[in-house]
Amino acid sequence: MAFGVATAATFVGWYGPLQVLLAKQAEVVGGAGKETVLAVVAAVGAACSMVANPAWGALSDRSGRRLPWIIGGAVGGAGGLVLLGTATSTAGMIIGWAVVQIALNAPFAALSAVIPDQVPTDRRGRIGGWFGLAQTVGIIAGTGLALSGGTVLSGYIACAAAVVIGSIPFTVIASEHVPDRQSTKVTMTPDFRWAWATRFLINLGNAIALLYLLYYLKDEVRLPDPDSGVFLLTAIYAAALLSTVVAGGVLSDRVGRRRVFVCAAGLIMAAAAVLLAAWPTWTGAVMAAVVLGVGFGAYTSVDFALVTEVLPTAADRGKDLGVINVANALPQVLAPVAAAPLVALGGYPMLYAVAAVVGVAGSVLVFQIKTVR
Image (cartoon, rainbow, N blue to C red; front, top):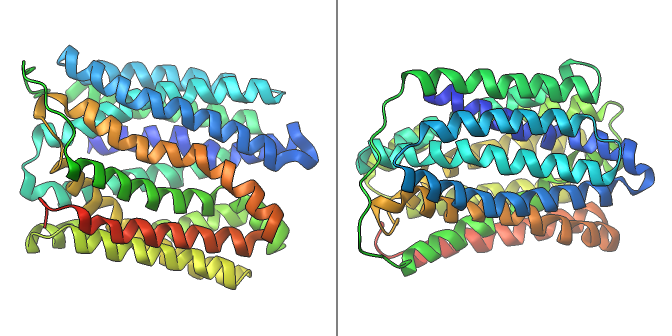
């Protein structure tokens, strides 16, 4: 329970800004150039995350500790959120979001490594499902907290408080079982690289699709209250995700297969992007949220279990999971680079069509992994 709360708290710190606050702040700072401001801020933050996650993971490996990195990163991330909330320029937003991304990757790297540290291989689908469920709770809570205060600054402060408070129980009551350091150096395996590529492409497709969701609802769907629309879609997505996030992991454990689940889930997620491209209405957006939630739920649990089975060495789990998590962060860097010109060239239909194609490519690549069924 405490592990789930700490995970959820970390995702509050990320997704309160990503779902609502950064877009609203960029609109104030950038005006008509809001898309560019948001793209730049998101890209720089994701670049920081890409470097920070494996670095924090390696430090937790070498220190033989996970817990200090969880509480320390939470406090640093909360400070970054408050700093970000006071930003009145693009540069200020970039600095604040960079601090948040760097700091919050410390608890995320440590929490990710706790699972292979302490959970047997044949139960990692189930536990990966609960890990994904906690992330989803964090996304919902972060979105709600971002909208709760009425102002951008109050939203950031609410998220900052949740990040710190949520991290405390686990760091107080948890025990640590970090593997001893090994003297031999193990290089990355081909299956590790394929697992990275699969995750990268599926996450890139999602990042391209979701970056401009607020603007999509406002400018394409022409929803009168796009802020509330984002929150409602997030809640619908989360409810759909709950139906598969644990069940998918449990079923994967029982049948002893990972790849077919990852592929099927990725294809379902790509179908959500197709819906957004072909059906730019509120009803279409709601249906896409349902489809995306169903797909992402199964994907989250099973892909995490698959990844833990291709890690090169137990002693470097934190670092290696950090390298894998670059496949989550790098798409956040590349998505703004791709999304802005796609919208300018072909509008939102082209944006979501490209997102679907990228997601399909990632889904089929999983079968290049040979040591996991």
